[in-house]
Image 1: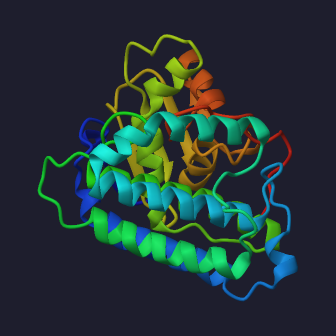
Image 2: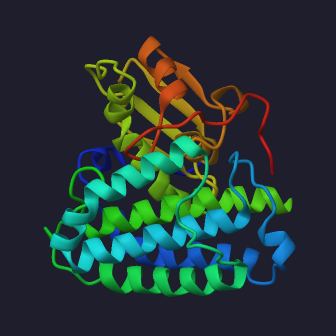
Length: 280
């Protein structure tokens, strides 16, 4: 396999990956759009593997969070003022097991139109800013490229739930490298979320990409390692796959523990997927 050594990207959120993340975000949105564009009203209300979430809930969530990304990028003061209420609504939605993204009786076609507008507006709001720009978000302030990576991660993860509900098998693409990288960068946050001290040393992570190359992070001589398919790591880090249902392998106690708790996002990790629930 060809090797792409990305060791430095674990230390620099303004990596070269940010130069094409906007195009990848657009493509990921288009791929999900193609899955839902022709659904009828009954299909929109199909349950997804996320308990309590229908396909409509998944798209409503994406529409809502795209709108929040636009607000953060265009009116920082308004976003900051709204943040306490947004966090309360988010927590209430998580506790209830449903999305708060749908407005009243919104149906599939309305949600699709709203999401199309929101994701186009988000792309326009995030692209074209000078280096050093930071926008507020639910965790630390984020660069436009990092926020676009987060939007791509959400689109891909929720899109996977939709695909699973429809029985559609998605082939992984190189776009998951943004999700993988977020998961690697969030290693210490994952430990902290579970009340655990962060490992004192970096891991060596080597993941096989969809094109057969290897995405590598961390020093080559690190004593603790994680290896396996990048697609499995992306699903694990978005809490869409149980660790036991992956082909990932860890060497070292901390690396093993990380595969139990890895997440590529800030906030409550939720319950994740049960063992043996690997779907399409």
